[in-house]
Image (cartoon, rainbow, N blue to C red):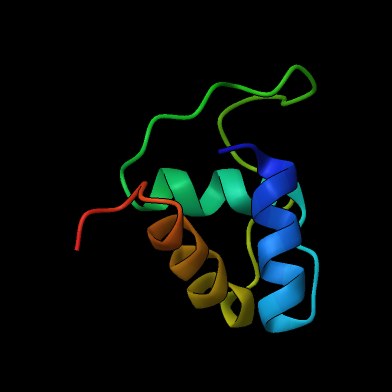
Length: 69
């Protein structure tokens, strides 16, 4: 699963294209391992996932088999 495929899935199903930093934020909040971005300064995210987009991205992670039910 690539972030591009996940963005395409979310756009088709929910009508918006999530930023890759939103996907990484949701993955981290769900306990999945993420790499530190090359442009990330410190431990805090500059652009965390908006609360209204969280469930859609989490469902996409589930769709691609990254989360256990």
